[in-house]
Image (cartoon, rainbow, N blue to C red; front, side):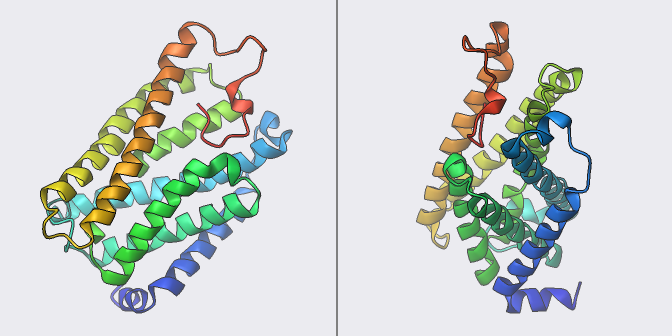
Length: 258
């Protein structure tokens, strides 16, 4: 670790590309795992399943990693601007590599139009994380931002269950309550704290205007998606999950489906 971090800090760009390639290797390895028959029969669902599988690996890894950093070094939560540890810097480098890989996967496979919300989110995250890696500022803030990956685990599981046609299973029923809890706690909670920190310290933070703008845009996106989530999992099922034309939402070509 002591030898690795100076190399990463000296060459953050190439380091990110290396981690991006590693996530691509993970993508290839995950293709060897069994896939539900209903997913395998549809080309779009197959791609979406593979994409979500890599995202699940990233979320499990970085969500746990971010929480560990905060628990081991509580200063992470207090000094979002200047505090960092070698492990937290490595975390941001690894996560940036994933976002590069995922954006490339979406664009190069021709799914950019249906996934524009993800691409916008990735662009905001990447610009912030790359700034962090090159300046070594806001490393702790980026760690807190990755708390949202705890919720991403249940979000990805939710979407994968829908792809597999299991949205009426006991597993989906349990997950939707856990998902709402983690969404409020780790996604909305982390975003609220980051936004408050920027506003509270706006007068002296570096490039505060940009980061506040980025946070507001992301807040709007997650607010809209939260409304979709509640509507679909807790209100729409009171009537019917099947429209009058008999089609289900999980057949949509839009990546961020309800």
